[in-house]
Amino acid sequence: TIKDDRNKMIVSVRDQKMLLVKDGKPVKAYKISTSKFGIGDRPGSNCTPLGRMEVAKKIGENAKPGTVFKSRRPTGEVLKPNAPGRDPIVSRILWLSGTEAGNKNAYRRFIYIHGTPEERRLGTPASYGCIRMGHKDVVDLYNRIGSGAEVQVIRGALGETAAGPVAELVATVQAHVLERTELAVVAPHDHHRVVADRVLEEVAGVGHVVDA
Image 1: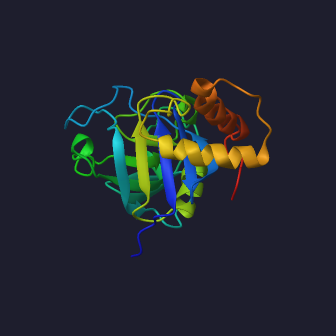
Image 2: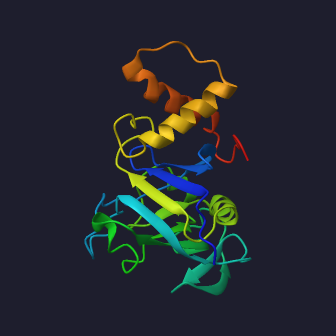
Image 3: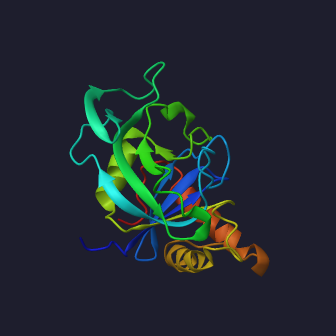
């Protein structure tokens, strides 16, 4: 299998959003949910790990949106979004593997990007360690990325990246946005935040494509 080195997912715990980047350009933003127990990698903690990970396995090819998975196998049941009293893994699974000391347990902790029927809770921390997405969104993401694609989970907001771990991303986002949008002149120390915030404005509607 050829490793996907063109796509990258940036997950902001503070924003509860994911930004998909392809070849250094922002493609799409999605509402997500990280853990309601906070961040961390300790086994049994139910926390979402920070740092750089990658998609180790893709599971659920061609399953109907809403298909329920148990032990990563489809049960045959299909749920609608916000089905009352139900909270299984649905639609697709992207099983993540850690690449750093701070997330080395991700794979054996079964940390996934996966669909959730609890779509009304997206945008707030609600999971037990995984990164949750809506039915249609996780299918869309699954179809866009390949095995080996990088996933980076950051503590702060997507706009707070000037000195953070995604400074390189901000530079490419800045160049892309400036090609498409006229921005007001701002103080240099505010520049990265404004650029990143403008990107989020452009992709604020979940499912809106900025650059396919």
